[in-house]
Length: 191
Image 1 (cartoon, rainbow, N blue to C red):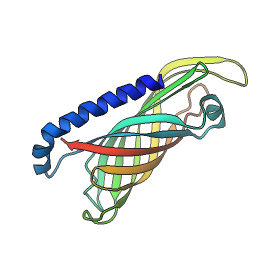
Image 2: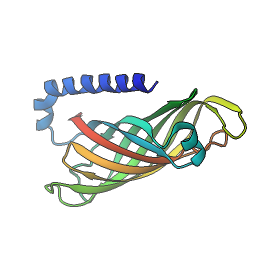
Image 3: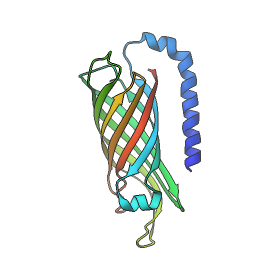
Image 4: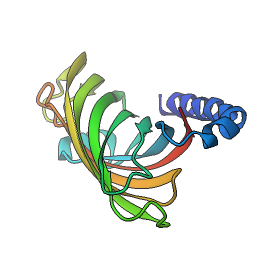
């Protein structure tokens, strides 16, 4: 499943990058607009039971829509779509949090690096099949829940940022799926 997700993420990146070449000249003239970005990284579950089942790191990829990389000292609305996926020993886990966030960049727009903070709330879709090690009971479900997050990061340029965020998920079947997400985001183009 992880290889399939990596292939899908790679294909999506190729499609997005190819569209950048065609749109780059027109988009650079545009002062406003949101950036469309792709991201990838690691998800570190905070719960010991989930770490025992899937390991200490799970792959995450996603897309980001934001307009605040150049907007220092103003709170701006952003949106994130993450896809967290893992599988091990017959257990599988997929979570897709979608959050509306408010973020603020610090420093001047011309600074080479700019730190930022962001806070978000939203919903999440869960699809998992997990055998609980302590009881041997199997849980399989597809359902919606809630998510919230707090993120800190740094823009290395208008197009590249590194971030760490804590993602809080509503518990499902007494599983605590919350954790820390470490990602690198590349903003491809404005729309």
